[in-house]
Amino acid sequence: MNVIDAHHHVWDLSVRDQDWIHGSEMDVLRRSFSMADLRPEAERAGVTRSVLVQTVTVRDETPEMLALAVSDPLVCGVVGWVDLTAESIADDLAALVSGPGGRYLSGMRHQVQSEPDPDWLRRPDVLRGLRAVAAASLCYDLVIRPHQLPSASYAAAAVPELFFILDHAGKPPIANGELEPWAGSLRELAAHPNTACKLSGLVTEAVPGARSAAFRPFADVILSAFGAERVMFGSDWPVCLLVSDYPSVVALTQTLVADLSEAEQAAVFAGTAARVYGI
Image 1 (cartoon, helix red, strand yellow):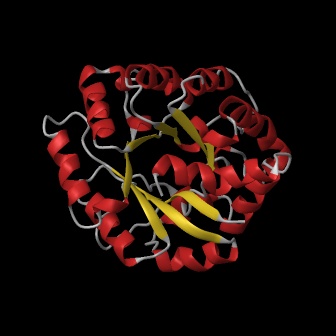
Image 2 (spheres, rainbow, N blue to C red; image 1 turned 90 degrees about the horizontal axis):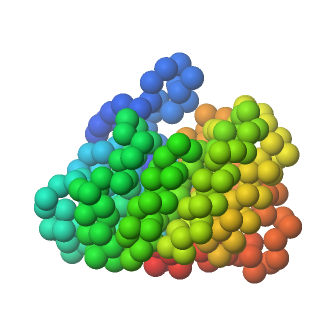
Image 3 (cartoon, rainbow, N blue to C red; image 1 turned 45 degrees about the vertical axis):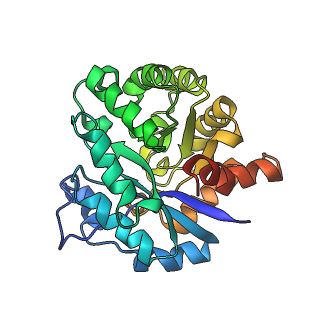
């Protein structure tokens, strides 16, 4: 089966620090990670293409990722960063799209999860920026926490011309097993047809060593809310290495979608990402 990894990262600590990597529990991530590190893992898992996603709110990172996409055949799409609130956002996006590697730019993202304002996505300047992203024919990745899901639903309704992709299913509280209020808020977001969800990043929301049964109730909510045609697999490598390895993340996803039809599994593992990101 053709597999697209719709969510992974690389970084070079000799170029810039990743200031979100702090604390002894993050030691495994405190080194550089390159496509050369990912490639053997991806090949063993049958992954043939991948989407490279931003990690820091630094303007220079996106052109660097686009250059990497040009040079590495595994990368088929890039989700970059731009300041949504900048007056120059339309020109900034145009420069990226028309610049070197711009054909690989699939979407944009901001670390909304770190914004102290739970209604950040409702702000007029942010909505203006989201409309500019839509006008540039790009998608928008949402990296948010459960309490920010209502604002994401508001933004999806306010900017219906933009396709929103929920990263890591909104980081559900798998460790404590409580579905609500996350599940209700997720269903509200999924009710908007211009939304999709990544079946990614779940292992780091569970207790270390959690078995598939801990994830299944959450995966069932995701799949029933969005349907396979709006769900896509992502490894969240190398962040997943905090608790798991690449093959285990792939295997977990295969287990969680095992009851789907062959066509639905193909959508989760490749079709949805290819369609939504324009790969």
